[in-house]
Length: 134
Image (cartoon, rainbow, N blue to C red):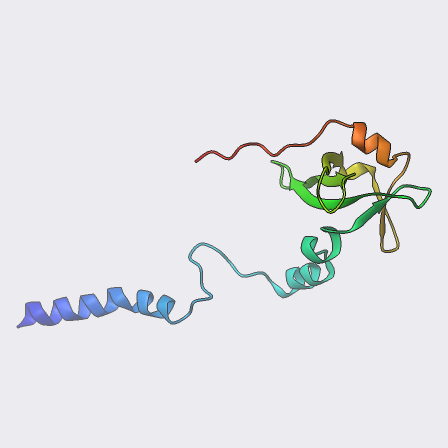
């Protein structure tokens, strides 16, 4: 009788953390939620989807030279390149070019790359994504 009581108590003690985790889906083992100060930084930061991707890029003469189609995060976990779709019409004949983030300047709501034209981008080496390994 004592053996079954000990077994029952041990089992309930071992299952308690699992039940607590199951009832709290926001808890991820090994990952800490962000602090309030970090949350304020996130809220005031940029959303790639809402504020960068799909935005038109201009040169210093206010001429449209392309559209930001993607951003590339380097191995050091910083945004290093923007992929600009240049040329084409409705995506047909479009030429993707990787441009270093260092060349971009934000002027109000616009993204500007000085000294670049549509022709410059069309003549730049085409960017192609690496094949994914399965």
